[in-house]
Structure formats: structure tokens, C-alpha cells
Picture (cartoon, rainbow over the protein chains, first blue to last red):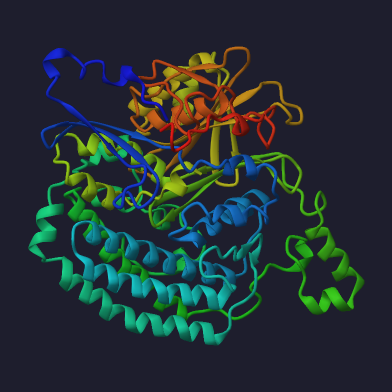
Length: 406
Length: 164
């Protein structure tokens, strides 16, 4: 994207000649994904930063208008690929709200458990790579080993490690079995120890603290005004968590605490994420104890889901319904209405604005990605910091360019 | 008195249309009064966060009279209330006032709406395209823009290694 000269009108003045410009990205190891920053520097001090995004823009929202509610799930899990299932859950949360489908208890608990696994996965990546960029390689390896375990769990449930496409309108692709629940239980047992070790490696590590404490501070007022949500906002003292404020899925039945901090710097964000992982782990353990039996999909008479295979093969009604759901332009009808529904993703408020026009496709499928709103705060956060702090702040924001650009 | 009743009494001639769908509380306001209504909502009624701005192109929508609907999702961070404010704008020059002076989050969100729909926001400090390249002339999320594009991709300039 060519840079507009007018961006720097006041910085181009002759008496500011000593300023120099640095291109950071689009391909840089610390951006982790494709984004570009144009930094104006005074020595090593960042005077001005202009983020340029759009390198990964691939028209997901346009595609959402041409794929039906079930097909589009394969696209949404390519948005935040660090916690892919969270996007699927968010998308179908919005669709089910539009179609007014009430999930079964087992499905609500299963999706809650998966969201919490995704939250751990996302926070592990963030903590790990934040440490990696600042020179702490060991913690990164510890975190990524645990991420592998979550991939295994997800693969066991859906058959796919990364782009799972697991949820469906009114349920999930297939139910999980007890062996899967045991796998999650095993993960919970091992995770606590690794979490403690990561704490030992980083939380009181002087080099790490020197790099992150007091860096990239965001005050509570700014956080609210700039639309910041999720762990970033909570690290600045905004007590807001959609799991508590607008309870969805099984969260009203479960006990957990909202983690928050006051400082609003990179260190506070790191601490909030670390503590949230423990809360998520507790949530998962609670769900394992109370995992309801029963069908995972809604009743096939609602005509929202594919009936079970025996019904498809052995009865004409089942076969007809299978076709009705699968065939284009048949399927479920949506009301002529629009809805905004958001869930608490690991990054913050992940919302979908869905407009129904009577067909089984969305007329408009807008995603409100948390990264997009968070990255807009970057020039404000980095102002008057050192060049090396760019990496620390970027790491703490957890920018996922695929979600940023869609 | 709820903010709804207060707004009604403050703007009796604006013709605010309130509606509820599932848990969404919504109001349609005329585009000309949008700025004052949003200012009142922020300053008097505590909607301190602007979570989302998006637009819908109603070109092919059944029974629609206006072309674009611009949607603002406001959040009151202390009570957790949400309000969805919608304003309609039309061709040939869809324009709305920028909300950047009230909420900083409007910066990129408005840029994206401009980039995708071509709706101008008056008073925006940096009204450039954000996701599409600057040379791009069309607005891709409009309904009259084809899914496969208009051949822009094939006509992008290609820089070879020797020219670079």
C-alpha cells in the first residue's frame, strides 16, 4: 500500500530533518503475521507509527453472502487460526440467535468446554511468543507443547487439528465419546504443572519484567473509548467479560472469576492471560464433572440439523430431511431480521452481525474482529517508546492478521 | 426514566423507531440527526463504548426503500447495556458525520465502512482506504459488485525481480 505523504506533513518540516523512517514488516519475525508498520524515529524513540494492514484481506465477508450458514463455518475458522473453534462457535451463536434455535444441554456444555480449551490455546501462544520475542525461548517451547496436546484433543473430536469446522447450526458435526473426555481430563492434570513452570520462568524473571513493565500503558478511559475488549481491557481495569455480562452457552451454570488488573501495561496483560488460563482450566474441570448425557444436536423435527444416519438410510422422511438441509436453496429459512451477537473470544469481543433475508444464506455476514479494534490503538500505545518496545507491545496485543484483514 | 423515554422527549420530531429482536434493542434514527443523538447517548446516558460500526447494502433486499444502513453498536460499560443505532443513507453521495471526536474506536471502523461501501464520514481525520489497496476504485461489499471482482486482480502491475 503506498504511503500517503500527507501523513507526515508536520513531521516533514525542515527542523525535523533528524527524524528517520523505518519500515517494520510486512514480513518480520516479530509481527508473526503479515502487517506493516511505518515508524518515524528520533534516534530510538518512536515519534509516530502508522500501521498498514490489508495484506491478507481475502473477502471473507463477501464470501459469507454466498455460502450458507453451515458452509461458511469453514471460512470463519480461518479468521483467528490460533483458536479456530472460537470463531465457529461465535458464528453459529449468532446464526442460532437469528434462527431462534435453543441448543441441547450437552451441546452447550461441549461448546463451552471447547471455547475454554481454545482460550487456553490462544493465551498459551500469546504468552509463549511474547516471551520468545523478548528472548525467553524456553517458555515458548513449554507453551507450544501444551498447544500440541490441545490440537490432539481437537483432532480426536473433529478429525482435524487446525481448521476443524466442527460446529453446525443446532449442534456439532459429531458427538464426543467418553474416551475424548478422558483425554481432556489428562490434559487438565498435566497442564497445571506446566502452567506453574511457565510462571517460574517468566513472572519473576527480571529480564522479562524490565522489557514489559510500564510499557504500552493503556488507561481505563482510553481502553473504553478505543473500544478495547477482552484481556486487554481487563488488564486496564475495565471489569467487563461477556461470559458474565451477557451469559451464553453454559456459562450461567458455572463458577468462575473475572480476572483483571489495574496497571494496563504489557506485564499486566501477561498476568491477566496467565490467570485466565487457570480460570479456564477450572471451568473445564467443572464441565467434565457435570457433562450432561443426551443428544448433542437439536431435535431433527426442527429441520435445522441432518437426522441421524439410521433415520436417513431407513426412512423416507429422514432421507428427505437430509436432502432438504444439504441441497442449495432448500434448507432452513431465516427471518427477515438482523442480529448482532457477540461472545468473549480469547482476544476480546468477537461479534457477528447477521442479516437474514428468508434464505439459508446470510444477506450480510459482518464479523467484528477484536484484533482489528485493538491494532488501531497501537500508534497511541507505542508513542514515545523505544524501538525495541514495538515488539513487546505487538506481542501483548495478540494481533492475528488473518482476523485483522479477513 | 429510561433513556428511551428521555430520548423521545428530547427529540420528539426525529421519528425514532424503536424495536426489539431477541436480546437486541435497536433504534432507527434519521441520518441528519445522528450526530446529536449519538452525542446525547454518550454524554447523558453513559454509552461510553462504540463496539462496532458496520453497514448493510439493501440493494437487493425485499421491501427496502433505502440503499445503505449504517449500524452502530453502543455499549454502556458500567451497566452492560447495548443499544444498536441504525441510520439510512442513500446514493449518489452517502455521507454521515464521523464519530471520531466522541469515540476513538470509530477511526478504523469508519475507514473500513468507507473502504467496503463507499460511505463517506465527514470530519474523519484520516479518510483513506484500509483493507483494499489505495489504487482500488470500487467498493467490494456493495451488492452490485460481483463476487469474483471486475478483473482488478489480473490487471495488478507485476514487478519482476530485475525491475525491483
